[in-house]
Length: 270
Ligand SMILES: *[C@@H]1O[C@H](CO)[C@@H](O)[C@H](O)[C@H]1NC(C)=O
Ligand SMILES: *[C@@H]1O[C@H](CO)[C@@H](O)[C@H](O)[C@H]1NC(C)=O
Figure 1: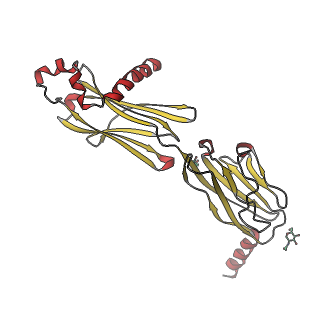
Figure 2: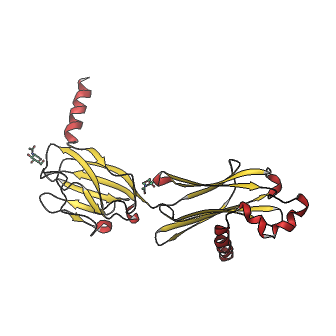
Figure 3: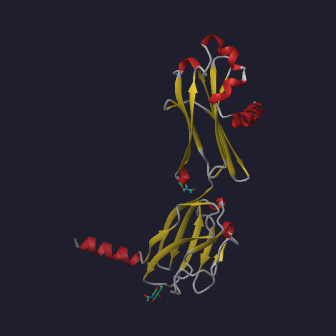
């Protein structure tokens, strides 16, 4: 018993710096905030040799350093992106512990680690931050192929960070081919699946689900597949497929835009 108490006492002395709260906004929508504050609140018994550092992702290079009573410095990724005059507290050993990031861009998405050290001890804590951009376009089309197959194509543009697309037919996810590209810091993703029309019920719901896991974001497109397009008899299905009338289960705008895009993509990836 005495041993345990002694051990805890020693532990407390050694750990004379403790981060009691790290506050990092988990998800921020891009363009909605002029500035964000990442704070790292600590207690210390002895301020001799106090240094506050922030790291981005790996621990190789600090992005911020403050050695009181000197001025704080922004380094690397955060250079020229901070308000270095910002004070989170009046305490001379606390005032510059927080990061005040101006106009945060998507490139600042990542894990932030605050490290507080003195001559005697050190403590650190890590939290993620995601700067999220919702999609500028989200489309799903059904393309009936001539050999009795249906091609379902789902695409999303302008998202950050990486989206994930899933096509579901009657609530069952389909095996799909996917591609994703980063264009000027925003993702464009395309997923397509081919199913035999005979394997589908006469009428079935088709969904495309988009998730952005880091942003806890979800969006959905919904459409209905009709095996026999309205007003057509089974014998004339093939004939009708080439007529403009078969387009009425699809939205015509995305079809016009997407089909050439998809063809281009398929040709490119050969
Ligand atoms: C703080 O730590 C330094 C270095 O170990 C020591 O010289 C100093 O006496 C300590 N100050 C207090 C108030 O305990
Ligand atoms: C933080 O790190 C974890 C583990 O390496 C990683 O899975 C996650 O995506 C990172 N978070 C961000 C916002 O980059």
